Length: 454
Image: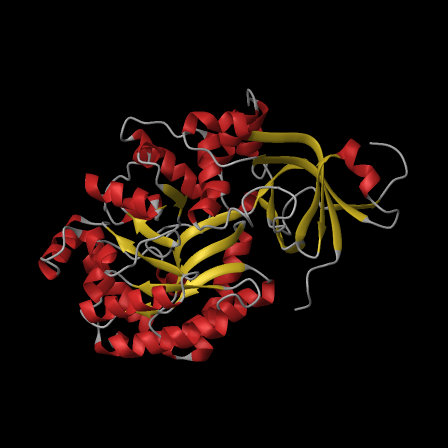
């Protein structure tokens, strides 16, 4: 695929958050909504953003403008935890975490030693992300290096910013899915050199979770992180009570689950821990002190019966958090739908999740969790031009509900509550339209830059 289109202009209704926040109540102050705005992209980056009236002078006469007057344009949605090899096993019935891994996950992941098969699923996976408005994701592959190659190649074709890595797993799994401490180190090192920082690809050191890595392998993972301090660490933490008890049996010398990772040097500003449903007080403090991040995965936590994530504690302890679909325990690729489930998880705990807070956790907050808020998350000039055009009237029911919307926040909440992939009108990657919903209406309106008018 060629480089990003040199110059594009998008006109429409834009919504984002201007700055990161430290408390949920600060969010309304950072909401930026422009009813008639212009975004100009050059070579994949945001070159200008502001009102249409002010922006017309920035356009040349031959600049085509893609106009979306009836839609809402938001920054690209960011998935902070998802498994691409589990795409085909979504909706696997009836187990909790440890049984689910043995019954469904491991047999499915065995297939990814086949490069052609890995390529096929990787292509499907990337298309599902685009179809659902996801422009960046932090992704688990399998133990096979072929799976990493397949995913990064598929992402590179779309110029997507993906973060991914080979699973490290040397025990408590089928023999054909196990590596060793040494082979995991060597394979990961090779993949880091091959892919990290190449185009928009970034690498994540990826021990599946503490029980499936020996102390020797975790030490090797820590060595990799020390040798390549700008790569990511991506794993699971405190998802299920039985899992936590197992970790304590396997690592009795450590002070708890998170301390296992911390002991081996695996916490830090680019370390993302999925789930964190059952954290101890000292673990919240450790996440804050090390600048580590959490991926909140509501559909997965509900589907596997893992528990209810206490989102309000991330604000209390100033711990970075993003939203994860966690496909395939998660039941949807759609971040908006996932936010709807996040709202319900908070309701069950007597807390409320506002529409603005929900969108923040999927855009600028997620970018902050991934240490990418200098590149992604809002429409700040100089950032990468990834964004989504949303159709708030994708169904008759949604259209009826939107007619009753009291204000912007109510309209956004209704969208999140009722959303699915039909609400994704178009997805833009690096300034280029990478996906368009052929069934969405109205069709895109491309117009030449008018010399006058609004």
